[in-house]
Length: 132
Image 1 (cartoon, rainbow, N blue to C red):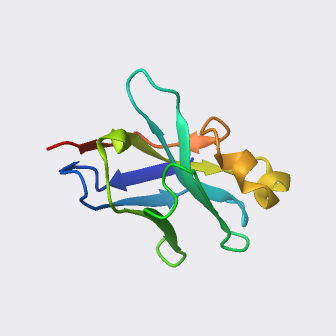
Image 2: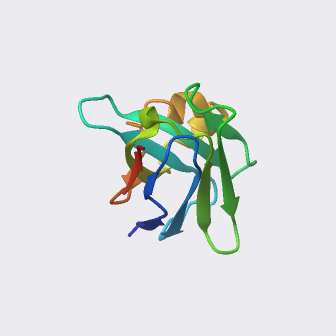
């Protein structure tokens, strides 16, 4: 059973930073993609970022490029999302998620992670609110 323990969501002022953490357990495949998608009220789900465990390649949505950075600690099975220069448009529930069942798409991360709908498992989410 795949489980996620997410943390780090908070209320932050515009221009501020947050780091989300996600501990993952129960994934048996050696190669998969793990990352984050977000969902704001009244908006479409958006794939934010992901990382492929096979080679460390990464994907970022255009809306977060240059501001967010994803990283992974293989030893602790933890994935992080460092978020800088936050704006009110970043306000959403952020979900940690894993795509394990389509290994052929690991070479096409934008396709696998871009919409946020193609993950196989995801956690409960953590709220990020950017407001003054």
